[in-house]
Length: 401
Image (tube, rainbow, N blue to C red; front, top):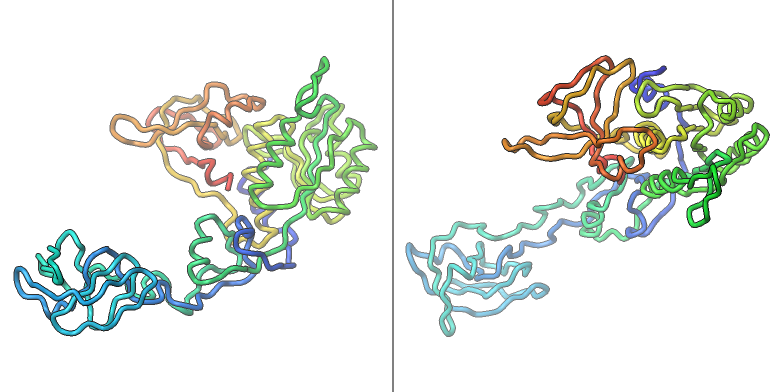
């Protein structure tokens, strides 16, 4: 069995890259990987503006204590006011440009409005409540670098500089096949011995989160001829093949043999739990990932191994999930030679320390353990856990966006 760190180092260093790019409207680019760095063409904000509703003033006009100033204009967001002379103030609203001659904004709560004047009730320093031009972004600065995968929080950043289109790597084409004579589509009635094909839906959903194109190869019958034919057709149509099931050592597991007949296996059996029967290699020259058939094993191995590989093919600069240190709220007997990934939920103890508690049933076929968890707690090989011990934790938010 291969340790996961060794497997990732081997796989990530030996994948083909996608070089083709395309232009996409900003709203269609979430989840895509930038093929070029983006530079700001303007300052953001583009002009000094008010951070408050209040009064624009020149602090040189203000004396100790209270000062009365003549109100000469009203400036709302989107309007450009005239310059101020000595002894004058402008009624101003959040986002409105600061008029010439003003160097501060006094919030309206600290002023007393009179008929045509305002009394400033406090001492104000220059720059108070003013958002300076370029305070957020300077013209000419790099917004995001090539290889960055665009997330929801990037959309406002790019739009604020006037961008409405970006160049991104083209979508990966992923051929997805599931194996097993017992599998049927949800919505149909189960016959004796059948189960619903949950893996197709979970892996498809994970792929959609990566904004790739999914080619549904279908459910492949449990025989070598059908498996070989499906793999060959998938290799010709896709950038990558993902299968679920059929990679173990049972008499009805044909995927491993089919891949070896038409390509090569670079890795088989991963030293993790759940997820040991993972097969990685190539059919012809097309990368292949054979996920286990048990649904939790398929989900975990996709997130930990396949997802980083797909992002690497797209040239993404950050492919591995972030891990955080949390306290165990449980005891766990010593593990074996495999690294354990427990489905756990987060909580805080009475001292406010973040802790994790494992889902009650950690079986590799228990889909509810995924829905009932916040992420994966990692227990290294040959390690026991006592309550209070620190564990590495990968939140699902790191794996599912």
